Image (cartoon, rainbow, N blue to C red; front, side, top):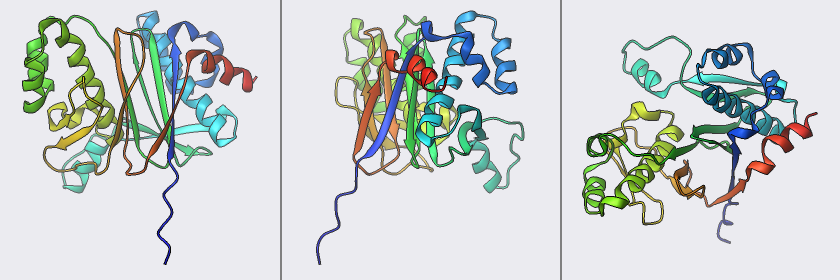
Length: 260
């Protein structure tokens, strides 16, 4: 009997957009609830990031599923609340959680993150994905944040770094861990200290998960952005991943032009 063929690599695409790509033309892609939420942001920068994230998701999913972006709709699911319900506990019934495409784009999974001047969107087909981007910025209580965020092995490695390296390393840890938690559907409510990943100066790797609900096989990779950013993408799969990155010039303007 011939051996099973090697599974085809899973394509994961990451789109990057700079906040300068935010345009009033994108507002028409938002549904009523998203437009209402966008208008509530006090700062223009927050409105731009939210607008780009939601519009990019619709445009990319429309391109991948071959339908108009107006047909792309989402359902919200909170894994933490689902776990509570299975355990017989009361759950929050208000709409919240990770968005999943329904209708024409059902079967695709995506994740959005934004920080500073960049918005990232990651998309896979049929497999959970999470992306996170963090702008490296001085923290008032970095030691306190590290104690809250880093698992014990991570904290020991981080504490052994020189002072100039610690801020960037902290955000490197955070991006990897949050990308994984977003892929699981738990988000930050899952607890950053439950997740242990490799040190930022090493290749990205999922090391361990404390407690129940471990995600199983994980593919984890850092993403390249400007020097003052740290970002990562996590895919819950045991297959090889073909990571494709599209730059800002290929994102909003081209996707929007394709649907004009």
